[in-house]
Amino acid sequence: MSERLVVVGGDAAGMSAASQARRRRGADDLAITVFERGNYTSYSACGIPYFVGGVVEELDSLIARSPETFRRKLSIDARLGHDVTEIDVDRRAVRVRDHTGEHWEGFDQLVIATGAVPVRPAIDGVDAAGIYGVQTLDDGLAVRDALDDGRPRTAVVVGAGYIGLEMAEALVQRGLQVSVVERSPQPMSTLDPDMGAPLAEALQSIGITLYLGESVVGFETRGGHVRAVRTEARTLPADLVVLGLGTRPNAALAQDAGIPTGVTGGIVTDRRMRTGVDGIWAAGDCVETVHRVSGRAVHIALGTHANKQGRVAGINIGGGYATFPGVLGTAVTKICGIEVARTGLGEREAEQAGFAYQVTVVDSTTRAGYYPGAAPIKTKLIAEQRSGRLLGAQIVGEENAAKRIDALAVALWNQMTVEEMSGLDLSYAPPFSPVWDPVLIAARKAAESIEATAAGRQ
Image 1 (cartoon, rainbow, N blue to C red):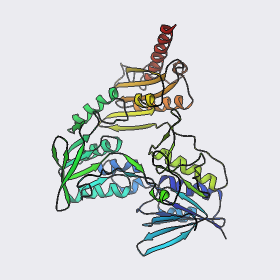
Image 2: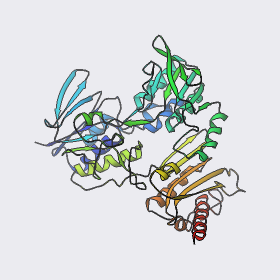
Image 3: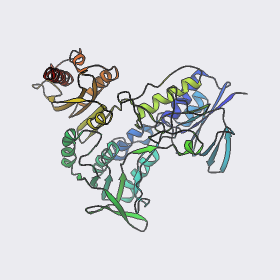
Image 4: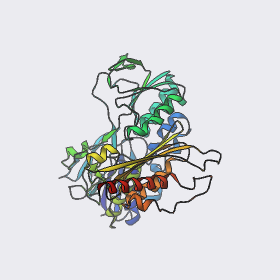
């Protein structure tokens, strides 16, 4: 009899784990069943705002592989509309609910890939119709259906993080009057305050009204549907509300089964993605991982991490050997023509981790200044005092700015100093960069600053 692998969750981490396990073990050796409570497998959650805004017209464009493809090509039984409600560690079985009722499914190996869930504040009216957390493709489809069918005119986005701002722009593209409420004094609090100003200006330039430094205290409803958002200072009319307050690990299923979770609320795994229970693995947004710079446990919900962690789990289940080395939190987005990127630690995070550091911020252009289309770019480096080791970086600029974060992420991954970075052999041609790329300028300035500081201590 073949061994039984059950995967809970059919998106990035879960399907990566199932696919990698199958590549190493045939169907006669390993039977793989995936339970997905939603209506889609292997989709791009990052594409949801672009689907809502109409940039991506067809829903199918966001789906990489359907359940039928998994069955036909990989002999993976992916079942949609199947919600796993309980894990019985002793019985080695999961309780599954579908449209026909409930049943128990046994397993020899189990992968928990339940993802993350949007944060919903415990305030009056938060469960009213018309209030959406956007995490799954079903969520995105619900928002787009509401825009198509209900003809809303006003929208309020609560929270100015990545998903909140991307959704705010999408709603403007759909013709709505949009307000964003953020309790921090700037949008995108993962950026340091000095890097957030250009983003705020860009949002306002397309008609988004920002209410910064305000917290939402309640939602007004009529007939069970949201009609307004109340903050500490005002009441904002709203036909539709998007919650962009971030996510938390969807780890309740594991926690209820006695599978250890950590300080972030995510499932604890080792480097091979094994949990504290034999034969049970976890991957994706439901787990916590280690930050490679701070050394601390973190929960950073990104599809890049989820795919890699699922791959690691699947390789190990399939009899191979792989480890997940941790994260830097490298992320990038584009809002209203402004590109934003970051990697590693910000100033507050560096302080919390106990680093003594120096900051360098440089303004440059994305191309040679004389070449048409040259646009401003602001680059910020945070480097450790004395050693000069890069701790983190942020970029805000216009077209062709943000992907420079990848060079900085590679330097950070390899624990390079800013002095070493200043000699990097980066490409140059006027359509792509000034002769001194902004990354090199920032590294050189940072190295000079650290040298001057060290000289002053002598």
